[in-house]
Every structure is written in C-alpha cells, then in structure tokens.
Image (cartoon, rainbow, N blue to C red):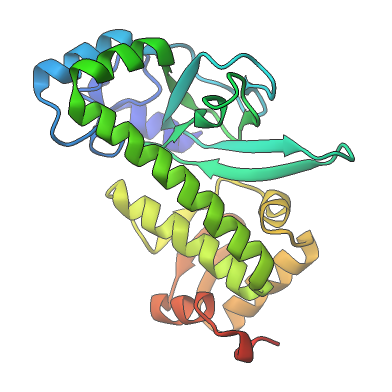
Length: 254
C-alpha cells in the first residue's frame, strides 16, 4: 500500500493507478508501444484505450471462456493467468508485470482460454481488439509491434514447457527470478532488489513444485549467498552465480 501511495504522490502523469493518465504521459509506453510511433499516432491509440477503476487483489480481469473482446496492458500491479485442468485443479500459466500485454490467448478461438486474476491492486488499460485491428491497418509499426508481442507469448510458452520438462527445482526458480529481474530492468527498476508479487504457492504451482520445495530452494540460495530473502523482498547478491544455476547442464543435476 505504501508503494501505491508513493507513486500517486507524484504528478498525475506518473500515477499508474490514475485512469486519466494517457499513453503519451505513461512512463511504461516504451514497453507497451512501438518506439517508432509518432506523437499523433500515440494520440490515436490513446483514444481507443479504456481505463476503468483499479482491480483489487483477487478480482478477475476476465474468466476462461468469456468472449474475447480486448487485450489488456498492465499499468501497475501484477496479474496472474490461470487455467483449470481436466481434474478441476488451478494451474498458473503466467505472471504479467507493468508494461506487459495479456489476453492474446483469446484471439484464435474468440474466447479467453485462461482466467486473469489480480495478485495485488492493479490498474489496467483495456484495448478493444476490433479497434486495434482497424488502427493497425493505418499504422504499420503498431501492427508489427503487435505481431512481436504475439511472438513473445509463443516463445514464453515454449520456454515454460522446456522449464517444466527438463530442469531441476533450483534451475526453475533461478530462471524465474532472472526473468523477473530482466523485466524489472526493462522498466528501469532495480534488477537486483525487488518484491515478488506472487506467493510461494503460486510460484510452486507455476513451476510444478510443491510449496515446501520452493521454500527449501530459497533457503538453499540464501545459504549459498546467491540471494538475501525477507519474506517477499528479494535481493540478488550473486547474479552470475544465479545465472549459472539457471543454465546448469543435465549432468550437474542432483
């Protein structure tokens, strides 16, 4: 809550919970938008974006099988994507941080295949897909950028499959921490000190590990002085060491 207050104490254009913030003023626009968009083109995009009240923790942005109408950009907070397995269990399929786009899973079948749930108070930009398609025809750089976003989604899915099928618990958690580190760096935040928005349970669910295993790995990383951990606060002490764990070869697994 203190982080939100600190953010909103700044001028309006810096407050990502404020629905009046525009794309041109948002400091995340370099992540969300193609760099080549001109100011007048950003204004055109801004006209189709809808900004409602922030989602509260546990609220759904959309549910699986809802009709696909929009894609969404996270302006602040964190969203998790979940799928329900055939036996009724919840499977976490992704985490979306500020500046990232979600909802593209609905394009192929005209309905969302996952549900999206706020992990904390989160401000969202809704982009109606029909309007985005129309605008993309007039702005080739926007169309290319959207294709790039779709490619990133496919790549992320492939990486998760590889992660779950081949890697040890240490490798999986190291890879997740490095992913969050890189994504923070893209937002011009610290790559080494950050707060994990998701619970240990969500991490275990996402990586196919028990919560006990997740806790043991974090303890092991602390003993090896790779990390300093205080509840959800993470401080990476040895970035190279963490990368070595994430890139371990099969022969070195225990």
